[in-house]
Image 1 (cartoon, rainbow, N blue to C red):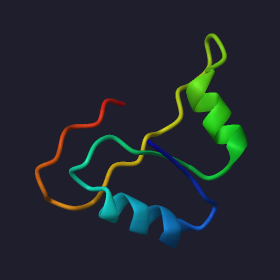
Image 2 (image 1 turned 90 degrees about the vertical axis):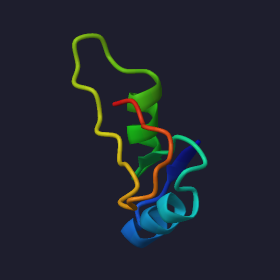
Image 3 (image 1 turned 135 degrees about the vertical axis):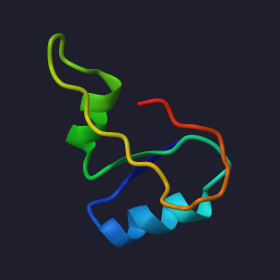
Length: 62
């Protein structure tokens, strides 16, 4: 699942609500989402944010 929002509180709320359901990739804008989906060759990989909850959900892959 993808969450695109420049508002940090929205991203945190979505990550908390979906904790344990599956992987969530959060991006601040569509440019960052495109970089995640279609990385340029030789470029760096954007950081994937993980829920801060201690609940034992499935692990995200970086």
